[in-house]
Length: 124
Image (tube, rainbow, N blue to C red):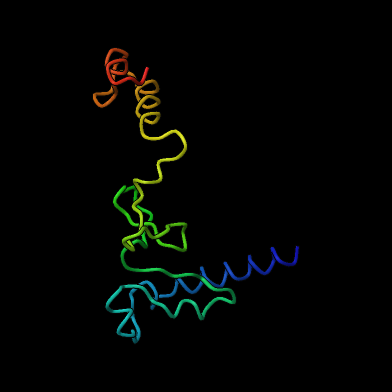
């Protein structure tokens, strides 16, 4: 229970820090990297545990299949030293199952395939 109480206090402090006028207006001295990236790396010093602030390519959790998967998230480099893209991680069933499920769950949508199209593509 003590661990939960520590987390609650840390969250309360962080919320108060974010609600200050200076934090909301972006006032105060900023480092060059903060101005360049838009991310204040000094936030790591405000917490007792590491925060893992990321910025740059691959830092967002976008739904794009073109996003590169960094090594710390499970991406492994190929023979040509390239990182894999998100499209290579479709799951066990693959994209065909996703199309089939979408079409079955949303009949009538323009993007959904009717049963005849599913058969034509070998999905039904």
